[in-house]
Picture 1: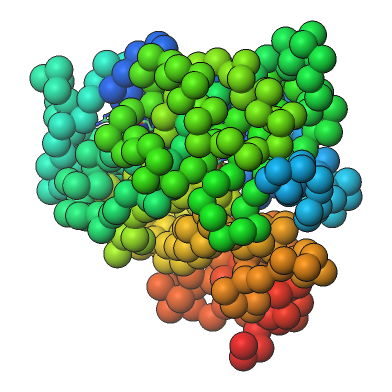
Picture 2 (picture 1 turned 180 degrees about the vertical axis):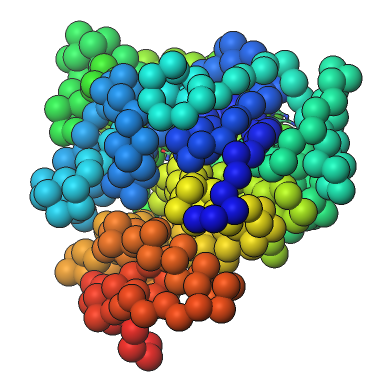
Length: 447
Ligand SMILES: Cc1cc2nc3c(=O)[nH]c(=O)nc-3n(C[C@H](O)[C@H](O)[C@H](O)COP(=O)(O)OP(=O)(O)OC[C@H]3O[C@@H](n4cnc5c(N)ncnc54)[C@H](O)[C@@H]3O)c2cc1C
């Protein structure tokens, strides 16, 4: 594209989204510096899932996915709270064949290290990104795109990406005041060592290679989510219960482990097999859960938001990391040699038009899935189980909608619109005309 120029980009925040956008933008030909407030020491382990809509970008970017030591998921299993009997099962056996990419379950630190290596490594396309730790962003002058850090350093960039997570400073600088409230549910996370569980004669859940859920059908906040990671050696448990029973809204992840009694207390009637696993749980951490209403915009001046900074979501669709990766992919495409004409403002406006509707839809459905597992992508099409009930069958989010999405088409459509040229491909918002989604919606026809 004529007018393309190499930009000097500053990324605020070196988490999953920050590393992803550094990869995408270095590959697009830009010079990237990441500023991270911490030094990455002391992160507590937990799983993080990456469905095909995230995994596809990892491959496109040449990330060495094996370094993340993932478990490739074969099933989603919803179990009865008390007996542990399967209630709703979604088979993922043909998932990779259908969508081209696996549903991976990573360990957060492994995933982060894998992305960091790709962002900063000498190999790979483009100039390796630089990382400066212990740089906490304090302010940005939106006129001059100059960032001031708490350590007194000041830097100027052509483009700034705010990837500074749910408590984003950049978001406030852009003038967004989140409408937020504590979630009705609390969450404690615990790690269980598979080898230890097996040694004690407990069920070896790692054998299922499944994302497993206890509860969730009853319209209650109680739910146990089990995800195996590290090739199955670690079982990462997310334990949800009503906030009235234990309120962790003001406590941060990364504190000293909570006592195991606190983890067991909310669940007297839980399937005894899984309760025995929780009894050997380690690194018990509260996960502060806040519900944020969608933000009105994602960019101002030459600054944009990415990942949790721009659209924090409840964890119940396991799409937070994938959405951050998709944001990064969108910026990588918009600023590449084919599409970027030198007009940063125009590219950021298209970024917002492409990302805001999709992330808002996932955000809304994640909030619904918090108290009704039938709204969860995958289970959302298991209509034959006796307890299936959803708010609006036509609005459920499905694997088809997540994975049939073609971001290149979405970007081309919106760029064409803003540049006043015709867009003739048979796609609407990245989905092909005529695609019949399992919720009955046919793309391109009136609902
Ligand atoms: C326990 C847990 C489990 C999760 N499980 C899943 C899952 O299974 N699937 C899924 O898809 N998502 C999951 N998520 C959500 C997912 O991790 C996030 O959506 C994703 O990490 C978003 O990436 P991010 O880069 O936007 O934010 P983060 O990864 O949080 O990174 C933000 C970074 O910015 C830094 N930072 C903050 N403020 C500043 C500042 N002022 N200046 C400089 N740097 C700053 C932070 O130190 C951090 O490194 C989980 C989250 C948690 C906490």
